[in-house]
Image 1 (cartoon, one colour):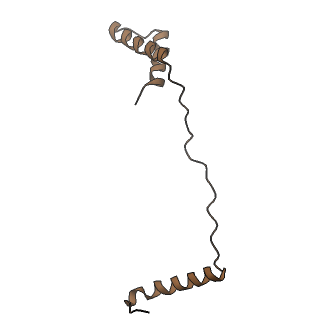
Image 2 (cartoon, rainbow, N blue to C red):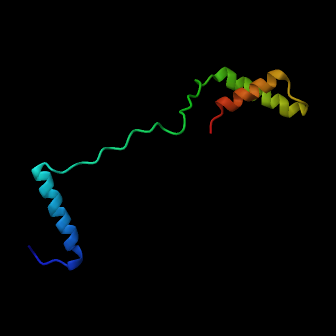
Image 3 (cartoon, rainbow, N blue to C red):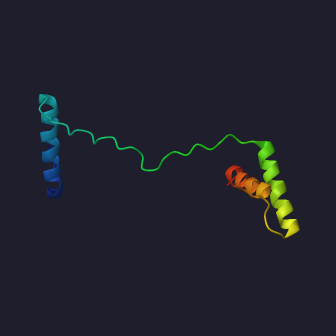
Amino acid sequence: MESMHPYYAPFVDVMVQVRAAIANGTLIRPRPPPRVPHPLPVIDLPPHNEAEALEADMAIHRWKESGGPLRDRDAKAMRLQNRYSKF
């Protein structure tokens, strides 16, 4: 073997032992970790509905123009706007 720095000798010894164990079939491989479900649920967004998104935009416009309290229909439309808004 060519001369090597003494620092690397332990690493080369381990490599030689691992290669010998693989060749002999005596290498015991660790078990893979158990699969863990993803911690965050996947949120399915509803399909984009152009009519509902336009209604939501109009409700916000009416609300900004009027300066008054939201009507039920406008509140529903604003919720839809939040649902369909593009980030």
